[in-house]
Amino acid sequence: MGTMYASLLPEHEAFIKKQHIFFVGSAPLSADGHVNISPKGHDVLRILSPTEVAYLDLTGSGNETSAHLLDNGRITLMFIAFEGAPMILRLYGRGRVILPDMPEWDPLMERFDPLPGARQIIHAELHAVKTSCGFSVPFFDYTGERETLKKWAEQKGEQGLIAYRQQKNAASMDGILTPLGHSFHK
Image 1 (tube, rainbow, N blue to C red):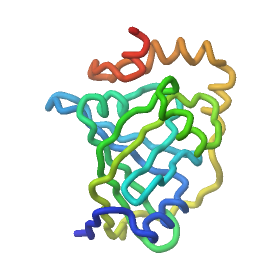
Image 2 (image 1 turned 60 degrees about the vertical axis):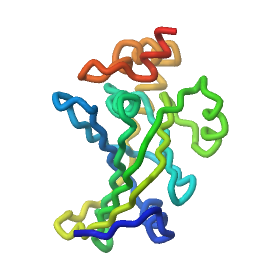
Image 3 (image 1 turned 90 degrees about the vertical axis):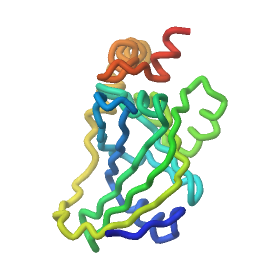
């Protein structure tokens, strides 16, 4: 059944820092909308406090989480042990998007290594942390990060990334405008 906590404990933080991948879940309020689950690699997550996390979101082919956060704020982050003792750790919270032109951007960005294609920071205030067994999760060996997204972003260049985001990241697949989409219409 798992155990619920009101905030991250030191052992949860240690577990998170060992992981090479995490997953982000979000959904619109509309019953017809699509639930989104997005994998995140690279060293992009920061624990800001026992009830607060943020991750640097890189330009990708979609922007579902951003749209869903603007729609209703609900977010879940999931970490899975693929090596060592089994465990699944889920962080439940309310998230928001921080764009480069917002005052919070610079102080938060100082916590991250600069990565090509950084488009926004997803910030989450946690209201629950849940552990579960993970007994059925198979073992996987980590062999390294893919460099494909970084290389793609570097080749696009800043102007190319802006054009790409206007085309691919302004709205969700359900047509919900993202914060980036709103910024393009200013």
